[in-house]
Amino acid sequence: MGEIRLDVVATGFDFPTSVVLDDQGVVYVAESGLPFAGAQPGGRVWRVGADGDRELMIGGLRPPVNGIAAYGGDLYLSEGGHPQRISRLDQSGALSTVLEGLPGPGNYQLNMVAIGPEGKLYFSQGAMTNTGIVGLDAYELGWLGRLPHAHDVPGYDIVLAESSVETLDPLAETHGARTTTGAFCPFGESAPAGRRLVGQVPATAAIMRCNPDGSDLDLVAWGLRNAYGLRFLPDGRLLAVDQGPDDRGSRPVGNAPDLLFEVRRGAWYGWPDFLGGDPVTDPAYTPTRGPAPRFVLANHAELPPPEPALVRFPPHTAAVKLDVAPEATPWPGHLVVALFGDEAPMTAPSGPRVGRSVVRVDPSDWSMHPLLRGPLRRPIDVCFDATGSLYVLDFGEFEMSERGVEAQPGTGVLVRAELG
Image 1 (cartoon, rainbow, N blue to C red):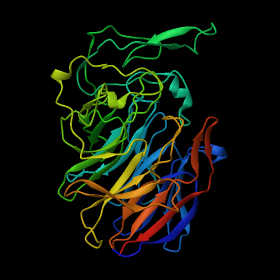
Image 2 (cartoon, rainbow, N blue to C red; image 1 turned 90 degrees about the vertical axis):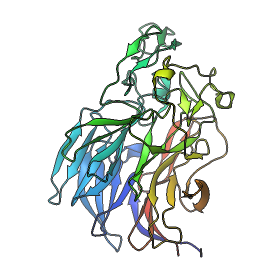
Image 3 (cartoon, rainbow, N blue to C red; image 1 turned 180 degrees about the vertical axis):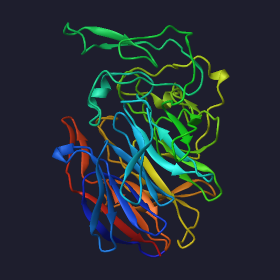
Image 4 (cartoon, rainbow, N blue to C red; image 1 turned 60 degrees about the horizontal axis):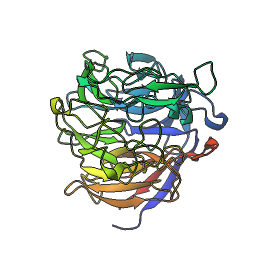
């Protein structure tokens, strides 16, 4: 393959998350609406012209807007703000609610919608916690920053193991007071070992689906911590990029990879006790910010075997969204995946920067190969057009420090890569 040429299509976005092309090849970009560094709050959707000019389609969406999909002439939007909802933006510019009442608020939110071969809307709901227990790390998340917040809801029937942890209680009237919290419980509450919880829909850490009008909501699979990116292959298989747990909070996990899974109906993907089939109790996942994690579920034998991963991305690369290369590219059928990059020191101890690039995955052996790096800051979405050009959406300047989020509005960029 020859040298890759990058052309800037449009600039000046405030923390964008999603790019999509409709059936006519028109490009749309969604901004998250997160008010970092004084950015205007509320998500927005822009129509981007061939000359880079932008037309505002709608604003004031519930932040963070995590996804945008085109189907049947309409745009389907994933609004992660509480209450979360999937919305439809029709050709007249009218916005209507497709589905709401999803769990939240929590660590993660409603993620992108993917359109299934049968015309249903598939979407993921992120976990409310890092690994099942509500902890003080909620204050460290720039997009959450509050207690109490919602606890996780299982998609399958589970039995709790002894999982209680003790932590400072910032909600107490007495300074320095401590409290005990357990898995799948509100902050400051715990359940005894052996308690059975019935699976529910909607669930957290799950992939669900519904009709385009929001009816017939059902569970596809459970145990994906935060499946931020979904994509159907041409043969109808569904892939999910699942972000692994962090070294933070009341149940930290160290050195956890992000994972690429094939999503099969009724399967269990391991969260909160397994990573791509490996137990989180494996010494390889020993954290630096707390004790080694224990299992929080006592009925592994009743659940489907935890699924192995197709690809393990290096720890803290924050794999996000993906697309499938069309015939017009040098590697048709290969996957292109955006790696947002680490968020140290929030999610892990400080160290060398990782991610902040775009990689290619060969599905013949699921090997990973570098594709694009600089001058990208934080690639978050990728999308091919019919000619084989690759659009890459860059979230913009966004880093974490001991002081919190350090971000710069207006630095989001849409670029087009010619891959011939």
